[in-house]
Length: 412
Image 1 (tube, rainbow, N blue to C red):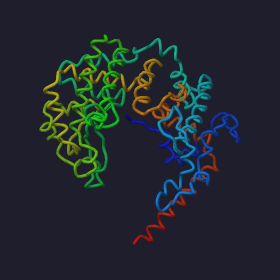
Image 2: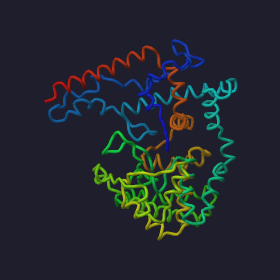
Image 3: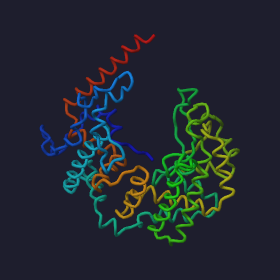
């Protein structure tokens, strides 16, 4: 998915310096002077965070952070605690306040302005009654597109459509990066598709067997919410996870993938059918709006061979069920609270260990940073990025560059 968080914007923040201030901005930021001390009181250096009783020669981490470790408590809505988690919550609360302002003002703003767009999007996401009434209706055109797959020749177009509507690269992933052996040239890359669970280990490591079993149940529950009969949802859930396990098993292990040479297999595009003759790559790239020729790097050729085997062995319905699941899973957070919270219950609680979900408005604020990051970042910069902030950031970066330069000069 093409996602862009506000955190990504800090590296580019200087380009927003001329953005007009937020409509209700004042020098003291009185509109957003929320008490955020519970997120910031333990940020930065403090001798209270040290443990002077620890020997730094034996356990420097305990010496440097022992005091903090003794007092830190993981909040129910988090899976971990630390300085960056506190900054995340601080940032999210500031952005939530800006989004609420934008929603209040959007009706009075000219169409197409950032405040109007951001405000309407936030208000739409918070219109719980409308979302409950809609259910899965917003996905029906895309579900029908998947249902219309009649044979393998329709699959590449359906995969491209899924990327366009949800950002989900299923079965295969493509992208363009510099050629690892000729960095002045860009080279198309082809990787295995993304998985529903965080990593390959969840599918192949027996230690994660209980998680995989719970995942099968979760998939079936989500399919039931989409209107599929319980027995059908259960059998489809088994088929979906079985297929995804086979896909995951065909990928490189983390140790194997750590070797750059193991993921460099440059070849002419015309050779792709030799690896997966049942997959029409020309149709896939055409559906994405690209006519590909020349060379491509296939990161994991054995994966494409395994994919071809699955296309030959598995019923077409397994792939249709899988695409349907990936669409529902990727879009669940944009649907009704009942659907979104069922998904979050699995991914946030069962997978990450959180015992409580953030309130809906905070989850929406976080999501808008991903799906609408650039406009939200402009509002943030207009409100919070003062001349003083710029000076502090530039000073900090200057110190870091000077330290790097000093180390390079003294490096033996």
